Amino acid sequence: MATKLVLITFAICRLLITVGLTMEPAELLRLVVDGQLSLDPSDVETASKDFGLMSRAEPLAVMHPASAEDVTRLVRAAYSSAKGFSVSARGHGHSINGQAQARNGVVVEMSGGNRVGSGKPAAGRSETVGRVVSEKGLYMDAWGGELWIEVLRATLEYGLAPKSWTDYLYLSVGGTLSNAGISGQAFNHGPQISNVLEVDVVTGKGELLTCSEERNSELFHAVLGGLGQFGIITRARIALEPAPKRVRWIRVLYSNFSAFTKDQEYLISLHGQPSSQKFDYVEGFVIVDEGLINNWRSSFFSPSNPVKISSIDSNGNGGVLYCLEITKNYDDSTADTIDQEIEALLEKLDFVPTSVFTTDLPYVDFLDRVHKAELKLRSKGLWDVPHPWLNLFVPKSRIADFDEGVFKGILGNKTSGPVLIYPMNKDKWDQQSSVVTPDEDVFYLVALLRSALDSGDETHTLEYLTDQNRRIFKFCDEAGIKIKQYLPHYTTQQEWMDHFGDKWPQFYQRKMEFDPRQILATGQCIFAGPSVSIAGHDQL
Ligand SMILES: Cc1cc2nc3c(=O)[nH]c(=O)nc-3n(C[C@H](O)[C@H](O)[C@H](O)COP(=O)(O)OP(=O)(O)OC[C@H]3O[C@@H](n4cnc5c(N)ncnc54)[C@H](O)[C@@H]3O)c2cc1C
Ligand SMILES: *[C@@H]1O[C@H](CO)[C@@H](O)[C@H](O)[C@H]1NC(C)=O
Ligand SMILES: *[C@@H]1O[C@H](CO)[C@@H](O)[C@H](O)[C@H]1NC(C)=O
Image (cartoon, rainbow, N blue to C red; front, side, top):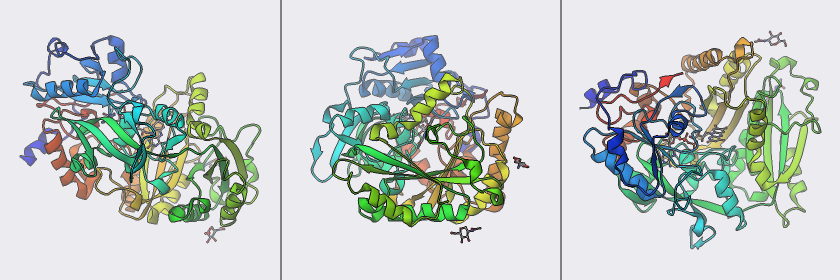
């Protein structure tokens, strides 16, 4: 049985043939829902694409659900139909490699305003914001397709906010929880999946179940970081804290990589300290060259706050600099002490003394910082371009080798986008969830967030950058650096088995239990999909 399955799914995303017919649109449209099942070409077109702009797969239809019950009806229909068809939840479509696409299936548009009737789903609306639950503290119940920016706006009305974030807020709750959801708060609070108290999930059998640590706990752990494989998250109960008013946002530079990582690791080791004795956010990035496309995240080094990179001696360092980015939150009650607290922390660090850049801004503006950069890129036509992004978790013990081989080596002088690097504490990650991280107490996120351009410069092209990704994998493989992909993308089941390693049997077992017909999120290319229809998408 297992052998047969492997054979069928050997190259799930490379085969473009569809074996066996899927459901007829007419049959599908007879399904009664409160929302809308659409064959509208513009809906189909949107659902065929994603932020990566590198792969496309057309669904038969698109559903705009009015409720969790609509999602249940659809998945139940897929599960019980003779031939089966795939169903993929689509959050905000910000995947890179077609993960939310569903060839010849149905894409459920979880986010967005074009819902029918009352507009927003009844289930999981924000009524419960701010309600106190005895031991578990504050929480908000959000619809699975809600964007984090919407969650933030809703909770701020109660003076509250989620604890753990992504750098960019125009992502959906269900989408980031299906991966992990990380940013500079993760060292302290863990990823977003560590800050969820309960979820409602529509399984691949079309059952709507409420899950938590106590109830249906196997499904609860499975869906967190589960790449959409076990169910569609229709509601998530998100842990909140009192929202700070303002943020002191600091950047300091290093030319010495080991001094940089030593300081980052020191700062994340303070996670157990009282909040006055640690930063609230620790990230960092690599500066290989300057220019808008390379530093689109940094509205920070503005004309009023210029950074003279050339004035810092990086000659002995191949021209590479490292920027540590840290913040401290405050409000009226802590405004008096924040300067001393920051001073005491900075004193312990070993950055280039003349390179301290400080900004002070409202909490919301800090959290929503990347949106500003997005608007800037959009205005120049630089947002809707292919994004051959690479996100890797690198074990702490090999990060210096990674620096030598990649930042100072393979990247050359040009990066075509921001390169983020920051460490996290593994003990803030629940090992029962589906997500895979390196086998060390501390590991780094390295995010190469590139935009491919036809600017005449060969190093900006999609081909060049895609090949560079291949070279980075090859380098890590040959150097024995045991990286794990974050937001993973593979095209064969063998590669997925390697990715999950020890966790594969559990992942496989959970799939057989919660989505035995392999209906859900076929765009991830982990399982073959319903019947023997070969899912997947075309490379553009
Ligand atoms: C500009 C930008 C910045 C980013 N910054 C960060 C960052 O700082 N930190 C970080 O962790 N990530 C970041 N990401 C990555 C982001 O977390 C992923 O793209 C993630 O998939 C969320 O995007 P989405 O909501 O659009 O999901 P989609 O791309 O729509 O879906 C992703 C996967 O999740 C599944 N899915 C979607 N909704 C549900 C649901 N309700 N239930 C079950 N499965 C579902 C889909 O089927 C698909 O397989 C960033 C992405 C972009 C484009
Ligand atoms: C770089 O930093 C490390 C760690 O702080 C230190 O041991 C080393 O001497 C520094 N190297 C240089 C060239 O300054
Ligand atoms: C980087 O640019 C410098 C000039 O600024 C050049 O001398 C050097 O060879 C370049 N390095 C690579 C790896 O391209």
